[in-house]
Amino acid sequence: MEKISQYAICLPLKDAKERYVYINGCYGDFQIVPRNIGEIICKGAGAEGETGEYLRSIHYLIPRETDEEALIAQTLEKVRDQTGKYFSFSLIPSYRCNFRCPYCFEKDISAVRPEWMKTTLSKETADGIFAFADRLMAEGKCFHNIRLFGGEPLLPGHREIVEYIAGKSLACHTPIETITNGYYIDKYADLIRKYPFESFKITVDGTRELHDSRRSPADTRQSFDRIISNVRLLLDMGKKVTLRTNVNRENILDIHKLAKVYEELGFSENPNFHYYFKSTISCFEKPENGVSDLEIMEALGNTTENYRLNSTYFRIYRQLRGLIDQDLYAYFKPYFCGAG
Image (cartoon, rainbow, N blue to C red):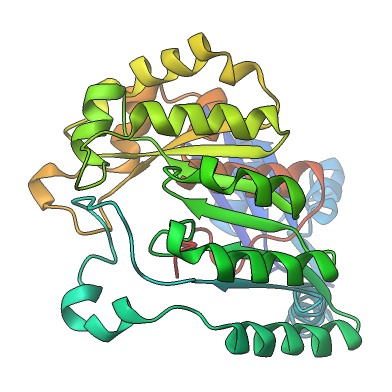
């Protein structure tokens, strides 16, 4: 005797009327199926012969005694066990920053928590964090990386604590990812060469004039040329660099020009270089000035090749490719903001 899996989902493809997408979350199935199969599944019907065999192979038809809840519980245990083997820490030297970006999601900190702006991460706190990491590693867990965040982590006044953290990271063979505005990277070049700084994420908000109108220090009002110079410095050192562009109505028409600049600079040919475009709509953005990630994709050209140029679409695309090619499980959440 057989029954229909309660975790079988089937939907017609929007742009391919003769094909359906089939997903079964209990067994990890992800298939593109022909229309006749899709219609059977959508109706909740059964089938015999070769069609029935195919429906069994994709776990639409399963033995009646199968306890799918128990199978889901076993799968979740495997996922949780694998997830729990790795850990990372995000360290904030301070919330101070030399930029005043209009959409900054941290811009209310100085008003709501002014005392935070006066605080710098202490060596004692860093010692406590790495002592905790030592305990986790003693339990057999893997220290994936340290992420430096802010404010702006590479302010000149942070050099002492940043070098202290970097030394601790070197001692436990842990790479450092740095999320920075890119303005003071040249001032940290010696530390970047000496310690395990592996990757950098920097925001460039358009070609020179547009970028400088949106992301610049209060004193000089210019940062584009300096950031580009520092990106070249990092790439010459063999570091991984990702450039993000925060997009709203002010600069959505500039994204193709910016991509052209990266090509002309020779950055796009470097395997350590990547760039992408992201909506500011969930930050402190005026509703009338915001654009969605869908609008960004339409401006880029909504093709599979361009999914890598938008983090929302690329994460979803990468999950689907993993389901198809690598027999992976889907994330518990299809999309989330790393700043959280």
